[in-house]
Length: 219
Ligand SMILES: *Cc1c(COP(=O)(O)O)cnc(C)c1O
Image 1: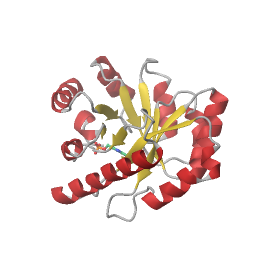
Image 2: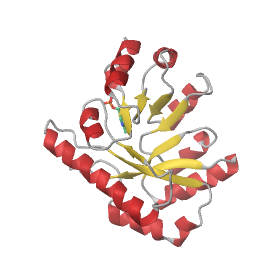
Image 3: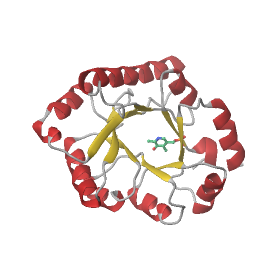
Image 4: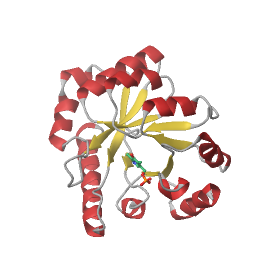
């Protein structure tokens, strides 16, 4: 089942888009089945759960923290996390930088933007991102690499609205690229698209899709 779903997804997703298997709440046996089917990128939304699973899967697994992150949890994953998707404050960047430095690593992160109409979703506005990126405090950080942007579309059946929101995130990416990262080859990721909307995300420039229930079943 997991293997078949992965094969189906891989046949649909272009080679330049990374498929992140979102395994939150799922047992280790499910992750192992996906790993055995060749999957290497996994996404979790809780640090503790990711740390426990990472200890049990082979070391060539790439772990993505996709959920909202509290500063006091950064230290538990600083030694191994591949990419942190949900960064939306200077304070968090400073803590990630501090812990990455201790771990002797450069930490790759994405800035999360608020693109949905719903009030509840986390994320920055472009103006806030500008303030962070232009601040002296940000320029002092040594162990952070901002690799792109992440966002979640509204939970709606209105395909046009979802497409508009993803286009908005692509625009944010291009604005930041032009303004701050024109020469940075590592600034290239647009993390958008989940089980319900990944085809729309890919049509609108996604480079990373975060797919859970379509691979592992409902939660
Ligand atoms: C749970 C989650 C996903 C995956 O959701 P599915 O609908 O199961 O594919 C993607 N991104 C984030 C941030 C999530 O929390």
